[in-house]
Image (tube, rainbow, N blue to C red; front, side, top):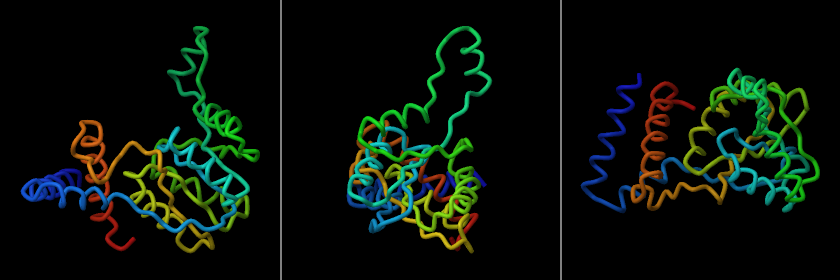
Length: 207
């Protein structure tokens, strides 16, 4: 299914290039979703959001959106363990996020004990963790380019579960949907994420 997804995205981009900026900006906005933020039980920082997600989560916490902020665990893998064996410190991404949140004045930080490698695994882990903690509403903080796809994945995962999901993209995201084709990093990010979103729509047209 990857070739049709790539071909579809390339067709969209070729058409967009013919009309330049207005169409390209509209294509960039396809990736981004902004839900109205309401009070919730917990703010969860998506694994892909990193520092931008930490900053946004801290801002939401101080606005009183939720009393808890959660990050996914980051246990060492085989390569990390080999560095540890050789006496090189292991930089735990979850611990760094927790330390940054603490420095930003977030007083209630929770570590989700299951590590995830991407969006699909977040969809596998998050519903069970929310149910275990009896959380009924969650604000998921992610990057702007990732927001529409992660919302689709998690809404499918939470289907039938009494949980309200609010997807909030970080204002500190590097991806600019209005001018994403003008820099190499944003262009690469946009093309990759458009392919993934297109594939998700093909596989799950009703989501």
